[in-house]
Image (tube, rainbow, N blue to C red; front, top):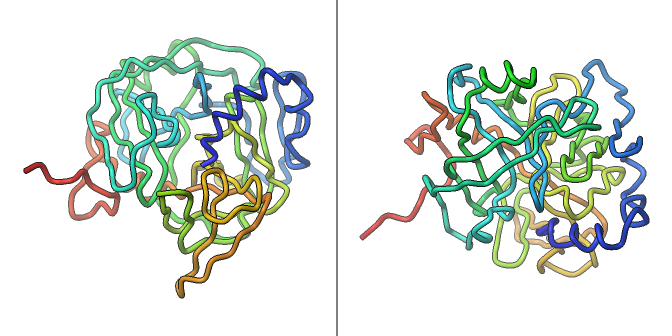
Length: 288
């Protein structure tokens, strides 16, 4: 994946020149930026958080209540304990990770949110970490006047106008979804039904975990996670597309995200991930 965070540290050291090379799909305005909206929905930094090495967002599912412990979503490969191995699923792991909540214009840090545990994390079929916080949606709303992003329970259609909002870089990328990829393979990991972006979305290292937001509905439909840096075939930072017949295609310079509707459908009472028969997410290996 682009453990699109390892490169972020290098980019910080390199300075603004690297940041400025992020691509035509990004808008910049000092530390913040908003891509040309083009649609009815206005997408800004509301609900966006920054991690020490990735991007993320404050999210809620269709059954979430204001009094529930709030959730923050980022990538599985952004997990502070290290990238989960292929086939590994982590649930209920204690965590004290902190997140910086941004102002809607992306210009200010409003405060710090803190996790109590990893609710769910994996890099199998998808690339996601979901953190449970020590505070509720209602408390965050009262203190910061910031609502959570709502997770869509539907797949995004190809050609959907999207915005990818990076809390790490305080930057918004705008383009359309280009195609749904049967399988995306990178190193030991394989992801299902990945979102391929149009070339305008040139996300960079540090944008891992950024929410993919449908401009029309303002719902979160996916999470940014990787891109092919060097044109290599199925290696780290160089994912390859695999079709239903097993044919492999490499697209240098093209970037991808993972759909989040399955996770939205698995969020039950109390904002818990319910890995029952109606949930299609991977489950932890049975203990013997």
